[in-house]
Length: 120
Ligand SMILES: [Zn+2]
Image (tube, rainbow, N blue to C red):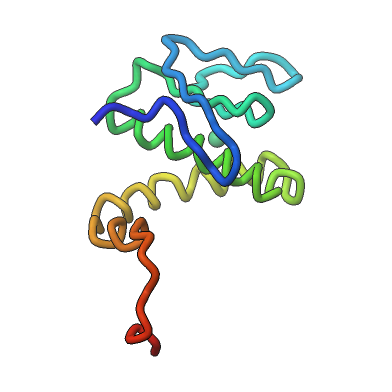
C-alpha cells in the first residue's frame, strides 16, 4: 500500500511529500540528519524518500503526531523540545499497537453508532 499524499485532521488538510532531501531550519540554523518534518503553518509533512519502508511509516506517524500535537496546543503549552520527546517516544509504540492489533484498528475506525444493547 502506498502512503497517503494528503491527510485530513479535524478541519485541516495536510499535504504529504517524500523528497530525496529535507532541509529544516529551526531559526538557529539548519538541523542535520532530518528524516521527517511537519510544517504546521503550511500544513505540509515531509518524509525522506530514501528511508526503509518501516522507517518511513514510523516517521510518517511521528510527523502526524506533531501535526496533532500542534492542533492540540501542546507545543504552546509545553514547548517543542518536550513535544519532540513525547512524539519520539510514542510514535514507535503507537505504530506497534496498531500493527499488532488489527481488530482494535477496525473497531476504532468503525463509524457505526453503538446500539442500546451496548450499555454497561
Ligand atoms: Zn519530531
